[in-house]
Image (cartoon, rainbow, N blue to C red):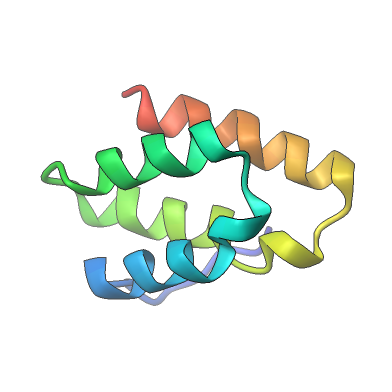
Length: 76
């Protein structure tokens, strides 16, 4: 994933999650929704946005890598 210099607001991250929810494992999407209910740093929001961005277009291997990174992020 490429790095991005834009800061993504919470609303953008929530919208991206809603867009990709159908493609995520159910438990992971629910855990991510709960994670978004917490106060988060801008770095966490940005990382989450980029893990979700174009998730549906990623290969199965790439999705699995992203799932692992998502799990690590939301368990912080």
